[in-house]
Length: 77
Image 1: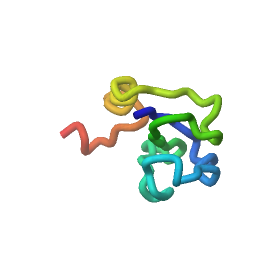
Image 2 (image 1 turned 60 degrees about the vertical axis):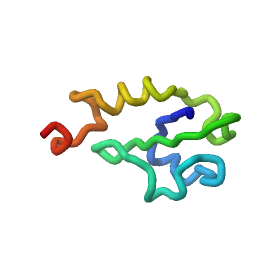
Image 3 (image 1 turned 45 degrees about the vertical axis):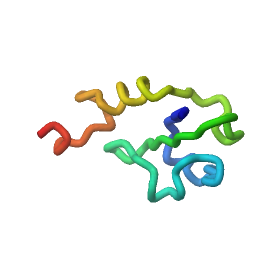
Image 4 (image 1 turned 30 degrees about the vertical axis):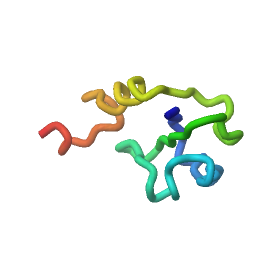
């Protein structure tokens, strides 16, 4: 599985038939609502070309950073 963080302004360009999410409402967004991430397997979809790709352990490190932009206060308790 490959993960890519995108700006929310790019959500409209996602071809959901090429990623594991099914719609904009199934994406996980950061706290500010300015970024989301998608995951895919196989070849890189053209709309994600040139964007930084992460493996599972890398994306978990980003998402679990207690000082990062992806954690909600409730997750700490």
